[in-house]
Image 1 (cartoon, helix red, strand yellow):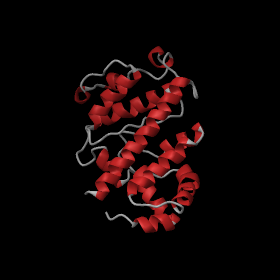
Image 2 (tube, helix red, strand yellow):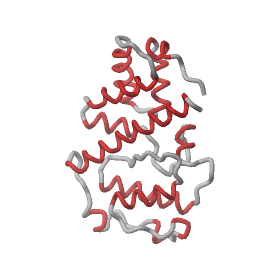
Image 3 (cartoon, one colour):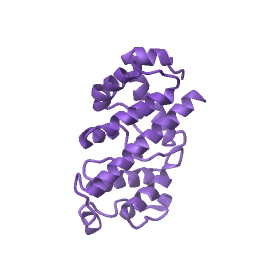
Image 4 (cartoon, one colour):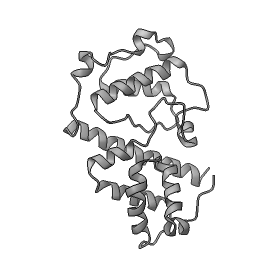
Length: 206
């Protein structure tokens, strides 16, 4: 996959939009706010590398209210999704090798648990080529949950434990805009930039 020239990204807002969707995934806020704001700044800058564009995006997003930053991370697919993924998301999530069904089901449940604890936030992480089974353990640890058995040996009772209405979940809920919720949003936004930089590196040095 060839990248557009720096000159075209600086001059053509449509090219910049395609470039940023490739690196950051599509979202309403990216199209409506990030692309036009960054494009305006790039036109007044000396551009010498692709990474400068991502740096400009990161600086721009630091000025946004929490609702807009939440919208930005919402463009990323949930860990464990297998349909409708971009080519880069599919590669990052290990879709080149089939993931066992119990692992996908466990991830689907953990995504629900995560959003129950952190309302309106999707779980975002820099996968970096790790298997989905490794993300199962990561989410469990982040949420302070007891580890399920080895994912390949999961039974139905393990897959959907803890229940969404259980005390193990409800006691951990972090209200929207609380300090803990905001910290998690900031972590997720940080991983969006890590993902974008890794994608860019792979495209520049395939």
